[in-house]
Length: 280
Image (tube, rainbow, N blue to C red; front, side, top):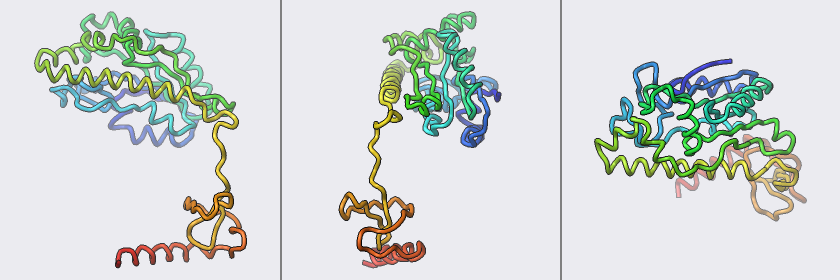
């Protein structure tokens, strides 16, 4: 297992994180997401949400939080989970077990309450605050397991309910959001509205991803095979002369046409066409 914070995973160490996960090696990573650079004094990071006050974001962060989990799901072979102990201990344990058993790269991103967030109830109520974060939609819980796709199932499972409409109450329970409301009320109001919109948007996207199953048999119709023609473009025999230049060499040729020449001549042909177009 590799352990790290959000400043490392989302920000200064993201290149290394991405490289390790993309390698396909059997490695497990736990990210403790405090949504701020906690160990270095509370600076804003790419994990810091819109409107939160932090060092280098004194007037509230103006852009949304990086969706690290959704980015890593695009690999298709990386196990990804978002967990929150105070909200669902069983889900957290299940995510760790699945990540550990998965023969490939895995990452578990855990909601990590932090003193730099300025929790009004204090650090003794962190589990309760985690539960509130999940219920408000600020931190949805889910697991993306590539093994499910191999069985024809949707790899994404959502483990939390839809936002319950308490996002504004949740935001105002933390000084990183509340302090801005005192300093610049109108701007703070706009930023909090933007956060609520982002929360609902993320929930809709996750539900769309979990609802449609592209891995089910017959869910996606295969494209006709692309074969080489006498030109740099290719032709689908079932689609007339419609070109389908994928950039990849196929086999054979269209009916009645000679096989294509070597790839270099195709590239030269393209350059000639480009030069002619530029000259004209």
